[in-house]
Length: 423
Ligand code: AMP
Ligand code: GLY
Image 1: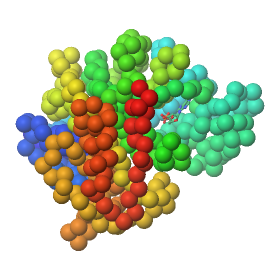
Image 2: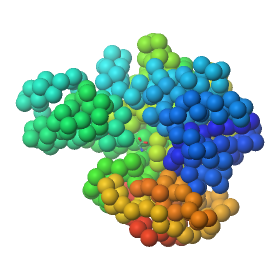
Image 3: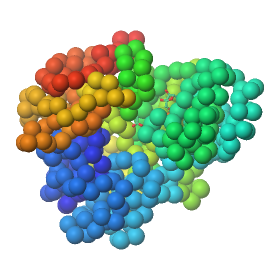
């Protein structure tokens, strides 16, 4: 088989790496890919939103399966564009990717089908939002309705901050049209867990749990980022939590989408908060998480291409999804200054020390070739992942592995997986 993966970050590197392990696959292309992905796939200089070019490429190369990693193309209808040309593609259609593409949609869905989530109101004008905030309990949470690179969520401690938030999202349009509509939500507290799942329209199979660290600095200080590190499994995702979610969240979400005429095939990523009152859905994503994928896929036993095929064909009930009884930790090596201002273009040294390893990996998020060398090319540069028999061992292995890599403005958090010690 020939497989095309769409995207060019650490998540897509992990997907390509896992696809490369499938005996069904002879050749992998990745559009646009990056310098790390180039070690497992042929990178093609086509952007993820260039649907016509991607479709033409898939036809020309007779691609058997396209896998879409990123949210923007999914929400924009890339799956529909491929299917319209008779091409086989893994991911939700546009009418189902709205589960991630519109917070108002997903909140209304949860309300209608009684899926546990924070109480909320939706607003189409800043005036109505401001009026509501005058009597709203604080802290409160403001969310841009549309996609905002994971940055459209504002936690506001008081009325003043909330008013400034409405200004930022709805008036100044910091995230463009994503802020035409906002959701204002009850503030909840608790541990967060990311649960990824495969879905074939009817059946859902849950992957192992993970936890992300979104803030830039140690002890969850600093700005929100795309994710500074992950560990898997989450020790807080107990059998009891799992039972609750299976009963009240996972299958109910899949059935709700089907009932709405929006059959969901692909990945549903459940962003959960374990509150005192039980697990609640913080958000849905319609794709693999980044950097959750970098710790989940190295622990997955199945041939991922078989699972992709089962999702497309509606035969996921026949798949026995299995994960190793071990643990993984991913520490992101970023450019100092991320997520604000940072320099790039520095040579990355030490990558060869990971060649052929099956217990530690470097998934590239932002790198490129320059004069035959691999150089930094983004805020998040690499996701250094290591396995271990348990979480503490995996964490020690991952941090040891980060020492093997060097580049000029290398920055990392030093407390990825610290929560493990509290479990
Ligand atoms: P989201 O993109 O919806 O996952 O939100 C980003 C982050 O904001 C989450 O990972 C949480 O840390 C936080 N967050 C979102 N919604 C809430 C909420 N209702 N209460 C408290 N924190 C929240
Ligand atoms: N790690 C969070 C996300 O992928 O949205």
